[in-house]
Image (tube, rainbow, N blue to C red; front, top):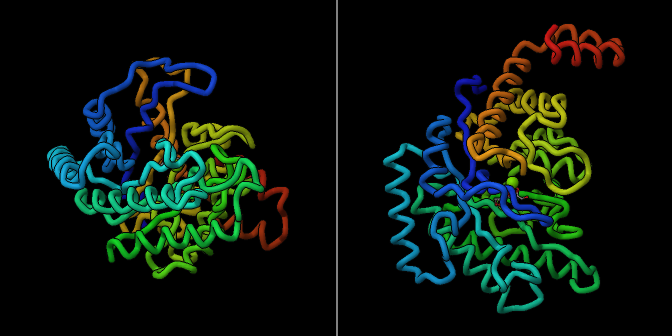
Length: 346
Ligand code: GLO
Ligand code: MG
């Protein structure tokens, strides 16, 4: 089981966002890529996660040769800084071709665009030294149910997974479920759906999942149960820890910010199941608040890690014996209070 000092931390360049929301513009200046990398180094994070176009900006306007050249240059920079690339994810929710879905678009041409772009993502990942491809299926779902054929969309998703698996025999696909936003209803809303669709692919062993705390909460589920479930299948290959206050827009709050007990249970589960033993990273998919001042741009990452490590201590010192006695006696009233007292520091 990894000890707290052995956990390795990771974040993405998008986690230094500028404060824009659907109702108002940016509230902070944009930090350069170099600035973001330097910030992660300053924090002592071990890795960065990438969208394909974080790694190669304006990817759609570039030739394969140019994409490879730029990915190689980035790899050199990362090596120079001693920062690893944890994963690469195709950003399939910006382009005009993905307005009506990416892999599940009604247009054959647009589905092909999504698959071709995913293949480029895999090429980039290989150059950056990671086999992990994260698939947040942002636009695979419905706004207008009657506009899509849900059964056919399962076939389309499997076709896309198969095309990616065939493209590189080493690539591992890591599905990041989210039940809604931007879609009204997503086709792969939970870990159960992700692991089920993996079974339909040509190589289920290379299709796993990524749990984001906020996404589980948005699905009305407990993230620690989702973690435990995925770990039982040996399929939890990455993790986006953050927090979320109930069923509303995706908040990406600092880890533990909305519900410390839910955060504690996630950490306890990670400790108990040995997450990280095979090199998996603790990634924080958190954003600064809209009100955060520019000089505090990395505080949400630093604070998330601090809370995580404090909760590792809490998991290590959890009074198991006492808790087990209460469980055996079905004394849930005192068990509940024991957990609260432990978290409050007594
Ligand atoms: C949004 C997702 C998003 C992904 C990222 C990686 O809700 O959490 O941040 O994790 O784009 O694909
Ligand atoms: Mg995420």
